[in-house]
Length: 393
Image 1: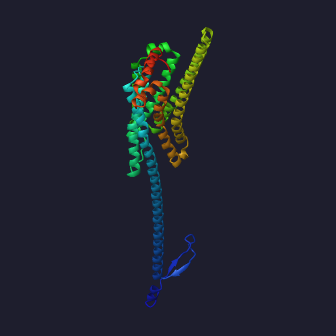
Image 2: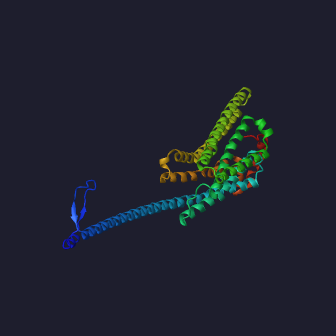
Image 3: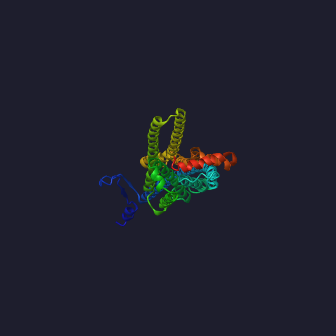
């Protein structure tokens, strides 16, 4: 036994099973030193596999980070280009809007023909002052923020910024004043006696002041934590849908009333007039006035539609097309539609000058195109005409 013990210790065997589920199947038999080497080799393979997996994970994370950074760079480049383009546009609008409105305000203040004493002049003065605010203050602020976004990498301007709030105040006030002016003209045509006896300049000053205060309060609601989707929806219907419908119906009503009144006057003059030439001249004058009114009304509605519809369309697309949000074409459409909102402030001076002959003549005097002595007779006739028809369209 003593001779056998060392031999038995020397030849211990280790049984390794390939299939744990089959305990009776012996795959191989190896010595203890071979078993240690096998276990060590297996650990090294597992460690190498883990290292490979970790390297692949790092490579994937690195690639995704590079792609994310590249997409952010492209997005930032796009925003800078868009900011630069809109910034240049707003910089041009500063002069295009401010200069004509400033000249008209100076003309109304100087009043060289002493003819701006109608209640209608109150609307004209408020609209011109509001458009001057839009051109000199709002466009300046928007141009500065866009240039900072493009040149210094500032955040892309959006809702809640000070220039945006000022823009809401100016543009909404101008749109609502144009709408109120159309209603004012409708009342003056349909109910001239009521208009002359009731509507005074102080009344219109109060009306326009309320419009400005309301627009300022509505614009500041952006800072009150209201959901921006709800705010924009209210803004669309209040400052786009309502002005378009009201202005269209008002000028349509004025046109039908004038046509009916002109028809009655024509029949009355035909029955009582003995001078056919005088009757023809009155008819020609009436037709010219109607044509001018139709042209002016059409231009007012046309530019109002052009300035509001693109913004209205971009908001509807953004609200109803979830897959379109964040797309470059929608962002470009949105920013372009904001620029179109300033079109109304651009064309208002041209429309008012075209519409009012007294303003056209006074403007010529102020800019020294026509001397005041050359239009003194025109001024006296205008004053007499103003006294006779203070509620004219």
